[in-house]
Image 1 (cartoon, rainbow, N blue to C red):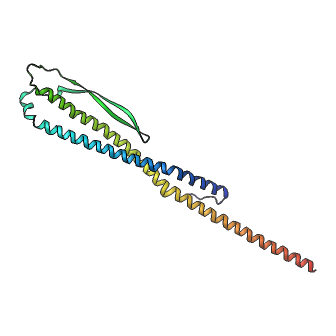
Image 2: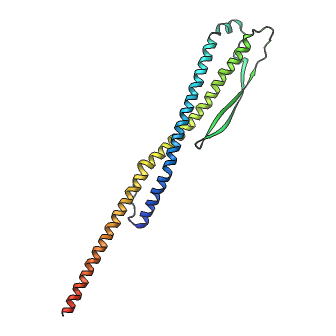
Image 3: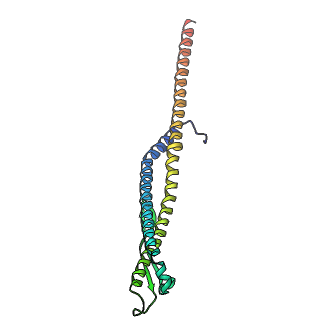
Length: 205
């Protein structure tokens, strides 16, 4: 801790600093709580997307044998051509928000392909949408977690360092100034008594 000046001006500075810390701390605490709540919501959304993807994967596993036998369903039958996101703001943090995705389906002969192929393509879209949204949600989590870390550091700095330090400095300066004032009063009384004695001695001459 830097050495402080034991003066009235420094006492005012320390009081002003303490007032500022106490004014901003509730805002920081509120921001921390908001970020924690948003992170929980993001984590819940990630769980939902994971559960949905697992459900669709289980559904696909029951069809894998058919896919392999027919040869109609190939990995390149469906391609992602675009991902649409918008920018959002939560507690002052910029985050991406998933809106939709665009796909291109390879042309196939409707006369010779089985009816289930259309259903398979639609379900594959759902799987890919889960993956794509999950990536965006993970980016949200990353941004929010980084801001929560910074905000928590600031809250701890104010609560555990700055406010106690300012209070300690104020007490130290007040004690010093009080001692100085007491000493000045004592010196004044001593000087007054000295003058009185001198006057009495002079009168006796």
